[in-house]
Image (cartoon, rainbow, N blue to C red; front, side, top):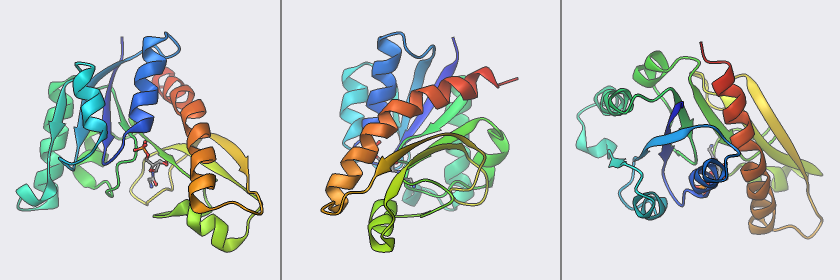
Length: 190
Ligand code: GAR
């Protein structure tokens, strides 16, 4: 059974959704560890309740970002992680992680990449006035939100959408595609 290492920074609804897809046998994997860069991440409570090993590494506790990432890598390796799953992990990934998990790290982003990279993608879509947005599951490379795309889902933007209403509909689609993209990434591991 392949091991996932899930990285979160906040509410962790994608992490929860992936765990539930595993519980219902829709995804053949185990969440070996959930790691957060914030002790305040509310998603940690779900992981703890479910008995999933949880680790918090706050970047401010380390001298350099490389030291921080090396601790992440050591933790992921110790938990025998095959695929790193970024799930609302709101921090750029640097060289230690990219080297250790080249081709073994995926992310979900709330836009149809390559449009609206970076923060507040849903607000960017509303500001631009696009009529279709969505979400993208992709491999992680050095450039932000730029790796090979595994799967996307489109969401119609409505005239009366707020950032909350659009984000909710995109999030619903994130929960529909991310576990499928993870399954695809797992089948392509050497
Ligand atoms: C999700 O919408 C995810 O796509 C987005 O943060 C949210 C996390 O929600 N990620 C990014 O914007 C990364 N650039 P969650 O914590 O409930 O999964």
